Length: 547
Image (cartoon, rainbow, N blue to C red; front, side):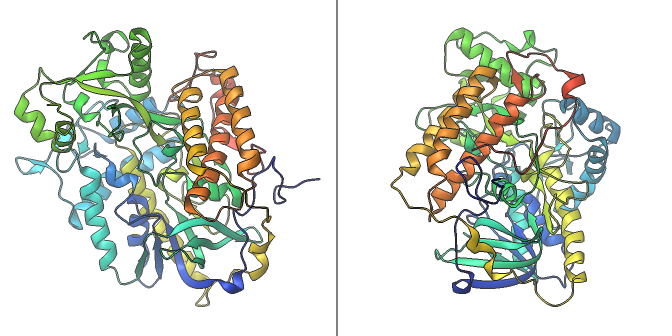
């Protein structure tokens, strides 16, 4: 009988590469944090001071989805609002799959976490000396804290990164790629990484925290930076950690659509400020789709845009701010104004071409409310995790506070448990990594296959899905994986391709299994929710044969 840990083209490989641990560099730490976004930085900063922390980032620490966040952080900070309102808004957006205990935890902790950012130097926008609170889609009250107009993530990460560099117990390893998590006797004991100089290193860790972000680059149209290839999710899956709800990729409704340009995010705060969505003929279509019109949740707006594009046979729709005060538009959204101006677009006067793009993976590594994964010694926070906060659809600006709340919680608990293991470092058994299958290295155009995969995912596994189309996608991905995953890649682009293929296969599997429409997942052949059969999470066994 072929087991999960034996190589077979029909099964994922346990390790991406085979190495001789005796020829590698070794580094020992109490807590290993993988990912330099808001969750990873918060976890590192929350570790108890006498715990040694190594923070590993794939690129420079400034490159993360968190740094690109425009909208802000949601928290109840006004006497006109209440915790119950924020909880209710989150539950409504989550379409029946939110975990109420997690929602209550995050919403209650959000104000204190925002205050903690202010204490370390984050400068949020003010009105008359008080925090300026914005309104975004799905929120019943203004509660979005933002910075520099539309550059909240950049400002928050600036403050956090400065704090990380000042901490005496944190060492940052930039441009260090997570190849695989290493396990021994069912426990995570560290990671195999490629360092900035191209060498391999074994990081021995008493506790490992994954905060490596999402996998938006599985799709061609995405707001995510190039680093978002799902490396943490794929490594956790290979290590045996259960994943959950990968059918729920949130597509942001408004991504700047200009041929040849990067897909720049156009925050929904524009719609919160009163911008209209119009089709190519100038018709405002959202009021007919939802009573909240442009302020509806992202899944509803995204599907309405796709319908409008299909109806008009046009590749995009347009955001219109021409009826708003021009000076206020440019002042409130300086980053978007600057980017659009580079393409000859005045956001206060001209229509802004937009279309949906993959934005936030709601599913991920299954975690308990403590942040523990299904593998002892392994924790997960932020977009890489499926905590239960978002359910089937994330409420705008809840993700940054989720990263703060769980990063804080996990950093404290994991560091204490690391020190409880005693002063001796955790040693990875040397023979463990030599079990990986060694195969012939064949010539493969990695870039071409990666682009083909991303195109397929947009075409067949996008906002609108259908059973027979998903079957077609699965067949194609399985064929590609059958030969691509036999390669012994020795480059980051190759490892990323392996991760993308694995995750794409899992997404297609989950999308096919969930025969209903709920939240961000829409099946045209099952257009209504099925609360009896599917009113629950979809757990993915770690041994699932996908490729």
